[in-house]
Image (cartoon, rainbow, N blue to C red; front, side, top):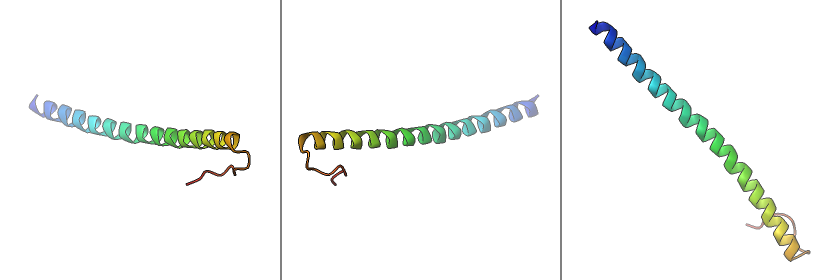
Length: 63
């Protein structure tokens, strides 16, 4: 019985660490993609606002 309990808890701990690691990377990748998409969207919006305010301004973002 004691041997079964040790195996059970080891499997449970290893599985929980693996699940946590998977979630960290999965959410990190999704968040990274969303940040890139939001950055591109904000750059496009800023370029559109600049060109509407000053028609002679270039479309490239100023940095």
